Amino acid sequence: MFSRRVVVSLRFAFPRQPDAASRALLYQTRRTFATPGRPRNVVGEPSKPVKRAVKKGVAKAASADSPAKEGNEVRKRKAAEKPATVKKPAAKRGPKPKLLVELSEEQKAAKEAKSIKSKEAKASRLERAKIAELKKVALSPPKIPQAGAYTVFAAEKSRNNEQLHQKGPGGAERLAQSARANSAAWKECTPADVEHYNHLAHTRREAAQAAYKQWVEGYTPEEIQNANRARLILKRKRNKKGSHTWSQIHDERAVKRPLTTFAQFNVNRQASGDFTNIRLPDRTRLIAQEWKALDQEEKDKYNTLYVEERKRYSEEHEKVHGHLPPSYQEHPEVAATAAAAA
Image (cartoon, rainbow, N blue to C red; front, side, top):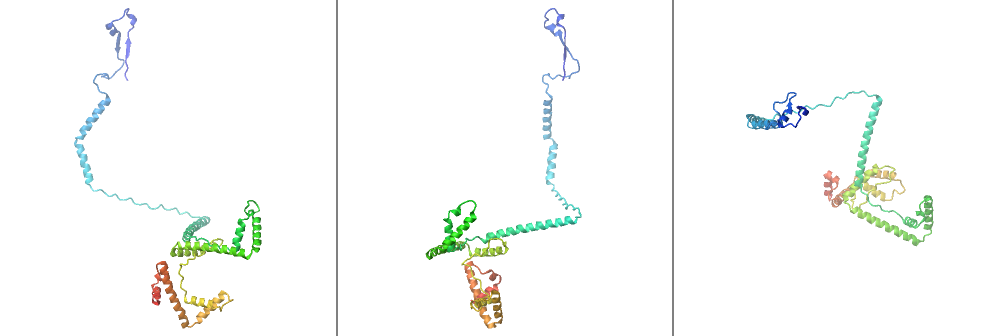
């Protein structure tokens, strides 16, 4: 910025009020240092930002019609017509080489133990998942109470015993006293009372069996068959301390499998009564010896019975399940033999 210093003459040199001409002489100015040639207050002089904007607009208007723009368009067109070069993929780097570190015996043992533990945990998870899937297939049938007349009598007496339902210490002692009292009261029952409780137990058992049958018939024979297979596997896998026995689901629609020739001979000999008071292993051994001693003519009789059993089994299986047994499907000669026997 530029500044001016004004040198003013002393007003007391003039005794009277100066006029306009004298005032112009009194207030004279002079420059103390160099200033721009043209001051900013000159009328019509544009500012520097205005000058720059005007120059920039003129340059753009000139470049719009210049041949340089046409050259840019030609270069772009040639670049578009030029076939694109396929960039080669970068070579994949292999894994970094691992540094071979010699492990001590303790480290090797710890590493092996960790690997074994990991494998055992994985096998345990797979086993639990398999058991959970088998439990879904095994179904959960309703229970059939096996309570007799005394059980119904004791349950009725226990419901009416207020002391047995009291809370607090001495519960085991009260339970024992109730059991002794029920036993003594049962001995004093008349035949009519016993017949009444027998009737109640029998009625409840029949109602439970009817509900069980209705539940079984709610599934297809194929589903019940798969459930029994799953229950057989679970029974083999179950812990000995487990309370679940995984017994087979009784289905009256199930087709009875055919008995082999020796099985039919064994059933006939067991029903004869010749092996009464003989242990089962000894009984089975004696029957096997008799089977070996039979002539071919006697064995052919049981072979004929076995063929008839297979025919009966295939027909009933197809009627109940809608298809032949799996063994007949895998071995067509078995089905042909059964059809020939028909």
